[in-house]
Length: 363
Image (cartoon, rainbow, N blue to C red; front, side, top):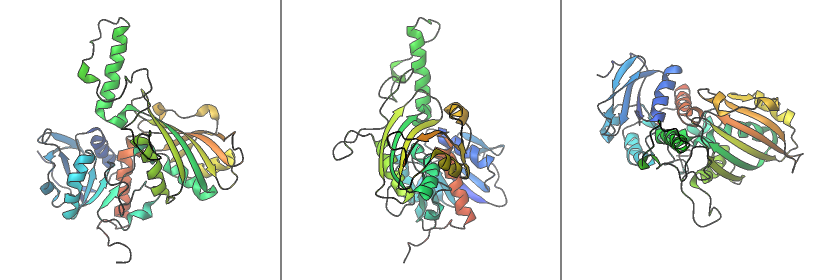
């Protein structure tokens, strides 16, 4: 049964409501008391007809069709790139503003790619679609933006250590199943052996292992041999920071951690910089928590379920000590890298009355 609408607020559709991020979206909308008048959970035909709980009430999950977007103000989309490609334009035709969590529109001209609190102004002239960046990019941006403003960012080298939740519930299940397999091989006979179909998400077994491949490999050109995940960090960072010539390179690795992405970053600046000066800047940056003591470095366990981006081990780059820094950046990828940022973007839309699509500048 669909819950009754509230008297004021917005009609919000969750595209992919029964998925891992969709569930997080509803949780964060509730936590942050976003003014939802009516919730429209949308999903595939397979789960349509089930229900989800929001604000203590049950809401009927509808099949995601073009007609389902009639009367909707805001769509929070997290159902995969092919679904967004098919349905997001249909939602925009019906007057919705869509905040899309997939990679489908991130690098499309005219579509703002935004991390809340970093480049909010880019939203103003949206044409109905606002893109949420990749999870590994999103947690870097508050840190990079603050330091770029202060010292002029010139080059970035990033290595990511990404949790299995970045691959959805299936990734989390595969970590559990491959761990079970290892224990089975060690003689724990009371643990059921996994079936072959349970090893489909990652390129190699993930339990007690590191997998240096996230997404498919690129072939040809200067990015030959990089994975698509790595190129997302490169191109999305440039777009969000408005630095199309920023030197960025990345290696992305999947690690046997349930939730929380960790990233090692080396930053080079135009101006001289010290760890103390960088920490002073970052301590004044909203939604960033700094560990000054190198022994107090953050880990995914502490970041899980939390909103901030955590930064530790800020130190001079020994190969470039006057202009370079190394640091360790950790966050809950399901929140800052997906659901939390999407809800924050919706809050920006409402705060500035930017909900309706705007004409391009100069028109």
